[in-house]
Length: 550
Image (tube, rainbow, N blue to C red; front, side, top):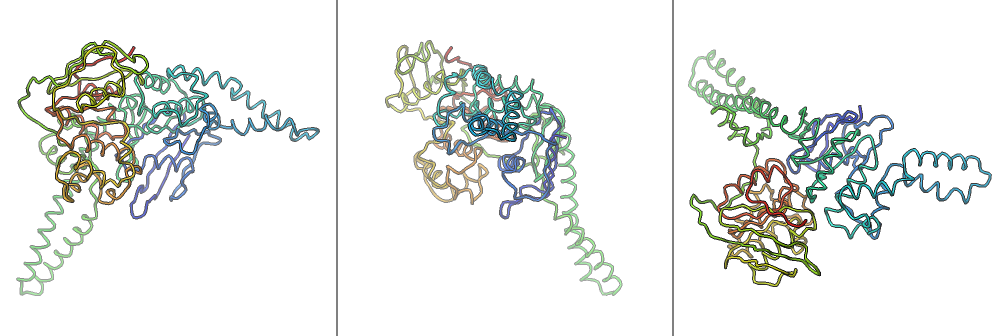
């Protein structure tokens, strides 16, 4: 056994995060870890690595098993070079390099230090660290990253580049178990394909937190964190959907029977109490009192049952019979509520048109971009990171807003209809919101969109997107990735836009939220211009694909 997790309890204040959460990972197994935002998936990684010891239970790894972990945050690295960062995180590298570099000057006749030095040389060779720089360079090229970035400071890299550096580190570590958190967020399709090829081929165990269905399609098993516990599903994403349908259907049916029994017991308690009160015969009174107490005792026990978190993907719900389907709709887990403009009739308005457009800065990033976007249509911009997709989006926004774009238009024509309203979903939240509380940020979003701002409206929006009242007091910069994504959706839709522009909107969202977004966009009566390397999302939205860059 490579990893055994048995957490009997883990809490944050009054919130129970795990309650008897158990699972294991076998050597060489590829396991996807999923769950709603806020269920504690990243926290679980902290427990496994020992960074967080505040829990009850046991976590055991195989004897001498080497674990490597990808990082989400990269604070405090100052001017640390990328190569140095990767090397410092590799198993034993720093310790061995220190011995090899420092011991020769002080060994003299000290046989013990000499033996330590020669052992370090042998181990350094066994781990392949003499060829390390060349191997890292090859991995940079596999991800189509410029190898000169190896000498760049970590803070100078983009979010997507840092993500790929983490994967390069994990791949070169050749550990027994790799813990990887949301690996494909901010990745383009080339880098994503490179990661998936590695995932298929690697012999090491992998535990990966992801809601990227392209990655989940490649795993051997899925573990879902739900209702404070871990639920195992053998097979990949498609198999998970089938098993989840069967299991959840059974659980919904059982829960519905319990709720019906509770309703009957409540009626029985009232009925027996009334019969007892109307009776005059002592024996009859005792009999009805006993029946009342028995019903009340069973009722008290059943009402302790908490509602499980039920979710079945939308396509699978069509396989439920009418009775079970009604029960599922009644008891299913709350999801975000995305309200977009819907209409049965759509015009043929041409909202955005690009004709042989070439944009760039000192020189063109791309040329020959042609597309038309009409009301009700979808256009997908597809290309590598850095190919100019965001540059094109910013030029469109500037055209609509009547401002000067940051790029230079070298050729072609970019035309937008007058007075159209844009809704923008960006990968990163505008810095102006970061130091506000979430409540203040939503107030500003409403004010900027010309809507009346009041406490009821703000709290309604927060509730629609699964924020609690306490979340409203949190600074935006301290929100989780999933929470920031939900705020971006609020901001995008606030002004009832004619055109939605989305840049990798599925990053950080959990599976039910992604599905809700897909459904809302399919029903949306306006036009959608989107960037996504999620093949499932692109299949749902479909539309015209416009290649950007080489």
